[in-house]
Amino acid sequence: MKTRITELFGIEHPIVQGGMQWVGRAEMASAVSNAGGLGIITGLTQPTPEDLTKEIERTRGMTDKSFGVNLTILPTLKPVPYQEYAEAIADSGIKIVETAGRSPEPFMPTFKAAGIKVIHKCTSVRHSVKAEAVGCDAVSVDGFECAGHPGEDDIPGLILLPCTADKLSIPFIASGGFGDARGLVAALALGADGINMGSRFMATKEAPIHDNVKQAMVAADERNTQLTNRALRNTSRVFKNEVSGKIQEIEREKGADLKIEDLAEYLSGQRGKVVFEEGKVDHGIWSAGMVVGLIDDVPSCAELISRIVREVEEIIGQRLAGLTAKVA
Ligand code: NAD
Image (cartoon, rainbow, N blue to C red; front, top):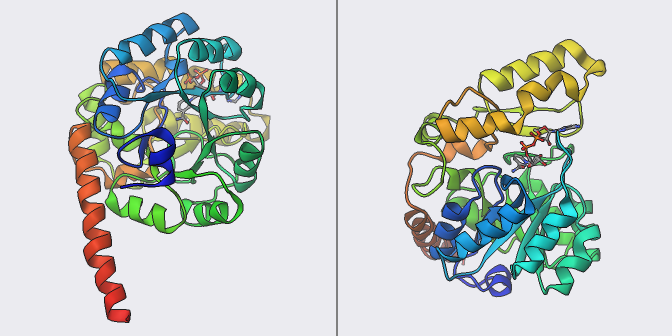
């Protein structure tokens, strides 16, 4: 399949793996790129810029296809040297970066001087328009269904995607709620040039996380996510578990007086790391999207992507073509 996204990034299929904290390591990104999609390493999963440089090298040893790096710029419990991470990415020769959280404008000179194509993840039309204005090559438009940070406007993809299509000239990827061929066909119909999948790639053989997490996703339905951190205007959609319930309880109790200190112990990404490494699914919060309702198996990335591509052809070539033939 050819779209503006496959052309821009030189990939076979318009399927991008989104940046995921603790998941976007060399094993994940190389498996997606080897399967014809675009794999992405998550910058902040590496404790230092030097470790990120090493992880990029490790990924190069596992694929000869192109892959990108995610740099998320959001509030963190410990300060992050973002410019140093941006320079490590540029110096490593990476040519595709996914930014998220805040405008990538301060880092654009570093990225553009290195010939990097920038995809910015946006949760609103106005942020996408701004991303285009500051020189991004593409945006990834994240609807309210998404895992992690959906922003504060709560606009689902069904509205956000066509609203964005009406305002944007650069290509865009639909993100949030995508996990199968039906989603990809719908995204294309709504004006996008491809899809971003995060949660769906977590439940694959190559995802470098404990099998308990993958099985929890398979067992879950579409109601198994919860919003945390709403009162601090840094909303996060996570898998519903004991810790996300505890956070909601504290948020209700504290109301308008809530401070980050009240939640820090439960929110910490270090707890999420334990979930993924040791398979203790109730130990901390971990991002997951409503798409868990559509995840019923743990295929390899190649099986998943080839299934999606095959079913897209069936949906467009048979089901939809049959409908228009009847209309004519
Ligand atoms: P962390 O342990 O520093 O923080 C845990 C959570 O608390 C994160 O969601 C963070 O945004 C939030 N947080 C921290 N300080 C805050 C403050 N002062 N006010 C409001 N919220 C605050 O972070 P981590 O889990 O190690 O993650 C590292 C980075 O990756 C963060 O920027 C985080 O937001 C981001 N992240 C993104 C996704 C996603 O959307 N796919 C998922 C997980 C983490």
